[in-house]
Amino acid sequence: MSKVNPRQIAVDILDRVEKGGYAEPLIDQALSQGEFQNSPDRRLLTQLVYGTLRMRGRLDWYLAKLYQGRVEKMEPALRNLIRTGLYQIFLMDRIPGHAAVDESVRIASKRFPGRTGLVNAILRNAIRQAGGIAFPDFEEEPIRHIAAFHSHPEWLVERWIEAFGVEETLALCQADNENPSICLRVNTLKASRDEALAGLTADGYEARPTAFSPDGLELLHSPRPIRENTAFGKGQIQIQDEASQLVTRLLDPAPGSRVLDLCAGIGGKTTHLAALMRNQGEILAVDIHANKLNDLGTLAKRLGASIIRGRAADATADLGPDCHERFDAVLIDAPCSGLGTLRRNPEIKWRLTPEDLTGCTGLQRALLDRAACYVKPRGILVYSTCSIMPEENEAIVRAFLNTHPDFQLASLPEGIATELIDSVGIFRSFPHRHHTDGFFAARLRRVIS
Image (tube, rainbow, N blue to C red; front, side):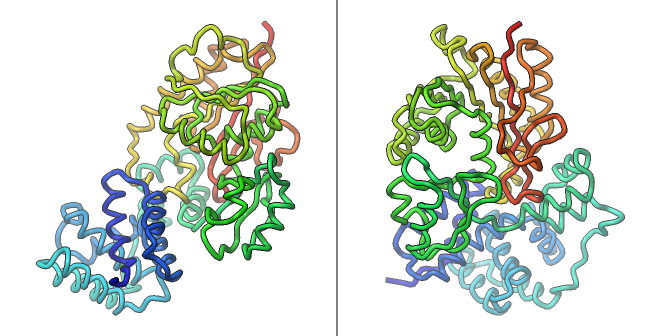
């Protein structure tokens, strides 16, 4: 059997991402094939894919200075190969420059036999010019500097500067390019946090309690993938970002209550709701994609959450009179741009356009309007996104409250850290402030008119 080549597989994954795929499942698929027995090779593959995606803007700036043609006209697969070479040269300390060149040329000889000279010339020129390629001046051109050096699209940097200011935007973009730790949610239907932590420690994992979520653990070291751990197989833990865990807690569902999760997806928050309810009551999980509900069913079985009932339906359409004013609490974890999750999903920033945001907001308004009729008088409605964009968040809630006088902002439950609550009582988390994904959540109560 020939030795696996993590650099070649990284380029292949980047090609598939550029065609619409997502890095995480593609990496997981590659690592699960059994060919990667060597931990350094596993780490190199993961770092090359995520690092090249996160720093693509800076790498393309380098490439534009080193290549005499137009970068955007270069064949995408060839461009991805050169990007990985540049990433190794400029941003990986442990790989000698000549090794990055040699491996890239070797891959090019198989995939692009007529372009090996070009690959060799660009990468060797990169070594010669390392440290000598200038970027736009931060003080004079903050948008162009942040976009190029900190690797975000210019339109997005401009939007964030308008919303948060230059310094906050700089810190946010820097945080987006960091490698996030894996966060776990302890499934309290099967273990306490102390029990789960003790079990992980005994198995050679290093973890610590999260700063904000009482159900969370931050994984600091893994001797093997967490999905191969005994506690994961037993349903004691689930991978879930800390901010996502806190959004679920905003519903504060009592055991025995009726809860509607209107955009349930594969069920991370749905199963957390079941745990908070001690598996007592009823949860109706709705999603337009039946395959996601199948995944939710598999997850619920592993976690022992038996109170969840799935329904495949379009959540912008009426679920029927049997659902009207029936639920004590309704969660809308709305489809959104995902711009709060760029640490974990860096490909989003390169495929999203300003026009895509407009499409998101139309759907978000429709979902929130539809959800209102399902909430009992004095019941709770939580609207959340994994976005930090004002047009997807406070603008949606403001428009809803203006047209639904029977709802008002409700105070957040006890236990939510004050630094996660803004001046009007809305939940917000940011990668650069809280070291979590960026989430927004508003807790609304239906009042008796």
